[in-house]
Image (cartoon, rainbow, N blue to C red; front, top):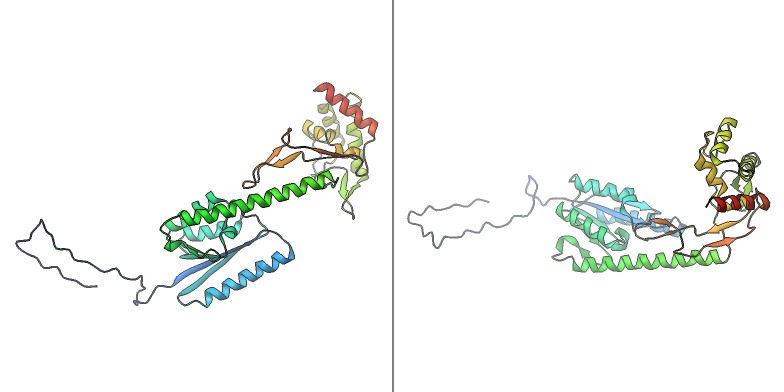
Length: 318
């Protein structure tokens, strides 16, 4: 835009003349309206088939919606599948979207709802502020919020609080369901790193005999009065292979076997618990929550007499 300024010899400095230079719309070199670079973010929190369909539907919807919008150019549809919304750091597609924004490759992000974007109020506000500082807007379709037109964060923080409260409620319901299954004697077996067992066709522990013999030797030697350090040296000298594939043993490896009640056919449930549904931090249960001991719930590797002798030694050491 061209404008001229007349030089006045006897200007009145006490009452200066004001010339308004109108704002101009962002434009490219040819004077046309700039193209808005748009991305979409979508997420489903489980790997169930119904959620899988929702995941694919969201991607398809955003591709056609953005490509059909005049003045918009699709950059990418960022999608995380089977991940919780409470922790952004573990969502690879979400982190990639932020990197695109920081490199100046985005102008606008579309998302189905605030709860799909984040269930943590603090994280949501932090990311929204960062993107706003980068001149990147977010449109939350369900809540009809466009951060480019927001003068206040109040409404956004209010909806974010609702999303976080929903996440906390879901977590409480899941915890209640897990504890109820514990009270009913349902054991969730994780045997990937446990020497002597593998998961059978019915999902229950199945004894791996060559590994089980190593476990029996560890229990017998300790019950007979040998120290854990010496047992570790003997196992290393024998070349006894641990579940991880290593034949080098430490005192800690021996202790882990001796303290595992599953070798006697029992299972103690809720040894650890989730202390915070937002960070998913787990804590050792030292009395904060009840524990549940399920007796004779699978085939034992160690006979009860040997197991009790080992426990007596542990009690004496304590």
